[in-house]
Each structure stands twice: as C-alpha cells, then as structure tokens.
Image (tube, rainbow over all chains, first blue to last red; front, side, top):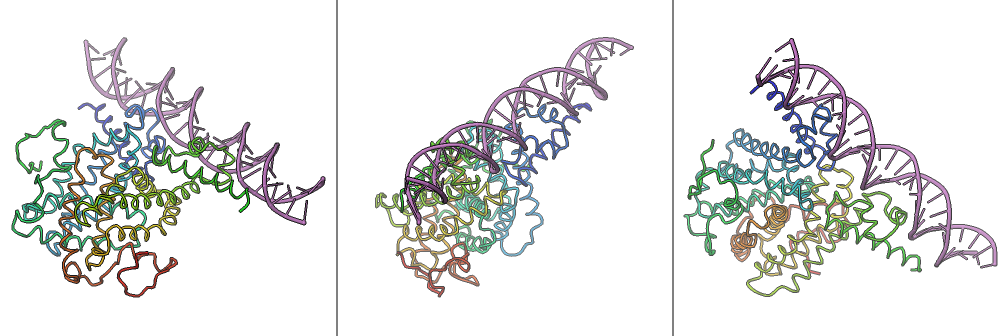
Length: 236
Length: 236
DNA sequence: CATCTCACGGTCAGCCCTGACTGTGAAGAG
DNA sequence: CTCTTCACAGTCAGGGCTGACCGTGAGATG
C-alpha cells in the first residue's frame, strides 16, 4: 500500500461519497457527473479517471448506499429502546431506516432501472451480494426466538415487501397517514403466527422454507459460502 | 363543442397518450418533450401550446396513467376465472395489474418525485382524486363479503402497500422469485381474519376503522360522502 | 365579407451534460 | 540521478433538451 494507492483510494472514496450524498439529496436525474465532481471537489479528469462512465459511478455509489442502509439498521437496532416485545421493536427499527432518505434513494434507483438495462445490470450486480445480507440483518433484528418459527421466512419476506411499499408511498403521503400504526397492526396480525408451535400455520404449500428472493441467485453467483444447508452464516 | 374544440381535444389526447406510452416504455428520464412530440406526431408549437412546461405534460400524463391502471383492474376482474375463493381471486387480479409496466411507470414517477417538488405537487394533485378511487376499486374487487369484516380496512391497506413493494422488487428480481406463491401465503394468513366474526381481531388499537390513506385528505377534498362513522361506503 | 381569435408550425438561442483529449507533477523503478 | 508510470488537472467539441419566439392559416364572429 504505497502513498499513491492511499491517495487513489481516498479520492475514490471522496467521489463515491459525494455521489451517494447527491443521490440522496437531489435524486438520480440531478446526480450528473458534474454535480458529483463539484460536491467531491475533484477535477473532471480525476472523476473520469476513476469512473469512465456515469454508470460506473452509479455502480460504486449503489454499493456504498446499500452498505450504509445495512449499517443504519444495525445502529438503530443497537440504539433502540427495549420497549415492547421483540417483534414490535424489530418492526420499528426496520421502519425507521426504510423511511429515511437513504432507502428512498435506493428505491428510486430500482424504479429508474426498470427502463435502463445498463443501470439494472449494475444494480443487480451490486444488490446481488447485498440481498442475502439484507435478510441476514433482518434475521439479526428479529432475534432467534422469532426466526425459529416455521412461519418466519414467509413473514420476513412479506415484511420486507411491505416496508418497500411503504417507503414508496411515503414520498407522496408521508404526512397523511400513520405508518407506525399500520405497522403495529401488521405486527399484531403476524405475532401469533410466530409464537405458535412451529409447523402449524401457513406451511401447507407444496414447497416450504425460503423459496423467494433469499435463496435465489445462489446457484449462479460466486457461491463463496458452502452450499450446504446452513441457514445462518457467521456474522463476520 | 365547435370543430376547433374537437380538434383541440383530439390533439391533446394524442399528446397525452404518447406521453403515457413513453413513460411506460422508456421511463421518466427518457420521456423528453421531444420524445413525446415525435411519438405524438405533432409539432413543437402544438406541444408547447397545450403543455407549456414538461411538468404540465407529466401532470396530464399521470392522470391518464392512473385512470388506465384503474380500468385495467376492472377489466382483469371481469375476465378473471372464478377459481378459488374471493380473496385468492382478488389478490391475483390486483397482482396481475400491479406487476404490469403501467403500474411500474407510476411507481417510477412516485420515486422520482421524492426529490422533485414540482413533480410531487403535480402527482399529489393527480393522485389525490385517484386515491379514493383505488380503494373503491379494491373494495369492488374484494367483494361485499370480505369488505364487511372489521379487519378489512387494515388488511386492504396492508395489501396495497405489499403490492407496491412487490411492484418495485419485480424490477430487479422478477424472474428470481415466485410472487404468486408469496401472495398466496399472504392470503392464507389474512383469510381467517376476514372470515371470523367481526370485531375480534386487530381492532384493539386506540382508534379503529380506516385511519390511513383512505380517510386522509378527506377534510380538504370535496368530501362527497358523509363523514359519519359508516365504515363501508356504497359500492357505486 | 372583413376581422379576429387561436390552435398550431417551425426555428432558434441558451443551457447543461458527457466523454474525449492533452498536459503536468509527484511517486516509484532502475 | 534518470526514466517511467500514473493519478489527476483542465479544456473542448459534440449533442440533446428546453422553452421562447414569431409566423400562418383555418375556423369563429360581427
């Protein structure tokens, strides 16, 4: 690690950080290379040296954005008051992060990627590794008592989808509605399913277990972790 | 209604239709005034005469887009095979529309509006009237047996949020996961709550009834319906 | 028929964004 | 000490988009 490498990494981090701030503050459309260049305080040559195209810049920014969101969940979890039961606390933690501007920026990128194949590829690549991390974090937040339930995988998936929908809805209707109340009622609905004896509810389908996003992509990715049935990966 | 008025309306509809098609096909960023102008086959003067700014054009396009989405739900409902019970059918109908490109375009507009105040105002205005319509359509799809339940308002709200989240997730993970399966499980979770004797579940909160998006804006809107405690509005 | 209105046609300047290009100076290699 | 490499600086041309601007001709009005 020479001085040049250090400087290189520092400049890179400066640029990517500025890109993330811009994405959060002014959105995808206004996050131009010039805007990032101004925010980062670097020259045009520096920016284009590190990121030849705008998509490359977005690719790096998305990685940092996802990492920040994940870190925010952990921090919220650590700072959360232990009021109520584990489920209520988990939902509050997840919601506090997923209604923040950082998560809103991520949702915006997803939405824009619908008609932008290159951005979608970049997003897929960046999110591919973060997706399992997301559910790992959700598992951590929920805690071992809840994750042990047979109904948990489906409920976790539903909760994530629900929170994504609420994040989008917040853009227009944030002040019109009480999402915490809605989430509290959601918790009231699923709580009995998580505390009942395992194996009983919502497990009558043909397959069972995590059949959705969580297990997908596992076959074609790098598969750095052994593919045995270990459901929880080590934390570090 | 003179010939001029007819021509005016025809040109306007041509432009707005082209804008909606563009929003669906190429997204918000690529829906420039030039792109719409080309698609509609009108001159620049015509477009700017009807819509002086790009936001004005978006405002009109959103109205049509929302109307189309609502119409699509009704058509799907009419064409739906009567397999399964009312809840499963309702969820399938709603999902088939909300994973289509038309709804994706609407979600993209929402996401982009996060950092675009003018667009957000336009969206709020356009969606303000459509929001109650949305839940009216959902009520229609669900049918009278389900809407009669005391737990229905909350479940309807949760279902809408869930579908919005799934619509966003589909952009990246459409082929990786089985949303129908997830939605089926969702139905399995809430079905008992809708068929139980009314008044029992999920109604222990301080307030009750529809406290979320549905009732919001009601004070400043036309408030065509009486504000008494009637929990279910007439269907037509 | 004369006049007016207005929906619309077409051009243009200004602006910003993107990425290519060449110059430069400091860090490393020999 | 010399040369090379490379991170970075700054400029530039090209292109696309927006909205202002003025012209025009068909319909409405008297």
